[in-house]
Length: 74
Length: 144
Image (cartoon, rainbow over all chains, first blue to last red; front, side):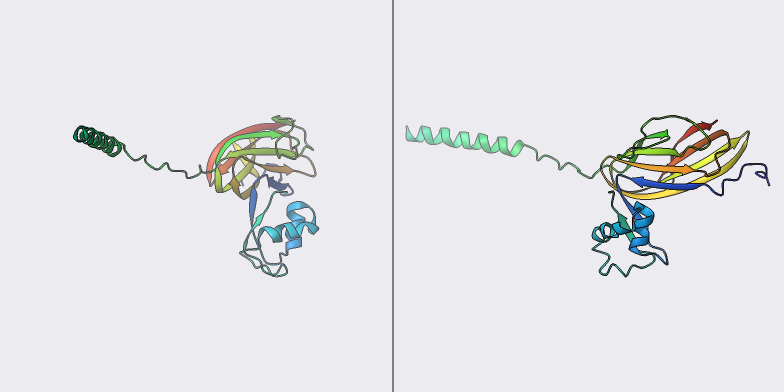
């Protein structure tokens, strides 16, 4: 209860990006286009993620929770 | 004469052999790349395409998006975290935490940003940047 008179920060929005390649861990319900939309703001950029992870992904429609994908800097 | 030349030649060969044997082999130099290290954190209201803050400041308005650009050197995988907090007297509220795992191949910039649709409460804030769960420093700013 120590923070009961403190402001509410529950609606804070956050994000991040990098000039280095980032690592994203796939969660249930993800698709490459969803990840591309979230990471780049453009679902059509899923191919860049696919190309960067050809060693892990054989079929772009099949990614699995727990897979750690490289998210290249664009 | 031939014997004398033969003797001189043999002596020269022996001398060369001694010099060659006395030279020490150069020790192999370790060429492992330096691990990722945080070299700077800059706060501001906007970033450029290079992820760097375009106009550094530590004073913000309630409707600003606040950026922290973290510069790193070195190569390899590292997890960067930005922990944003609000301070009033001795009370602290966590505003947000965000982690990013990066694979760097040299100097890099990773930016973290936060915004609040209904505006930041005025007051004192800070962002603490962690590298692999170890704090690299605290950076204070105000909203007014």
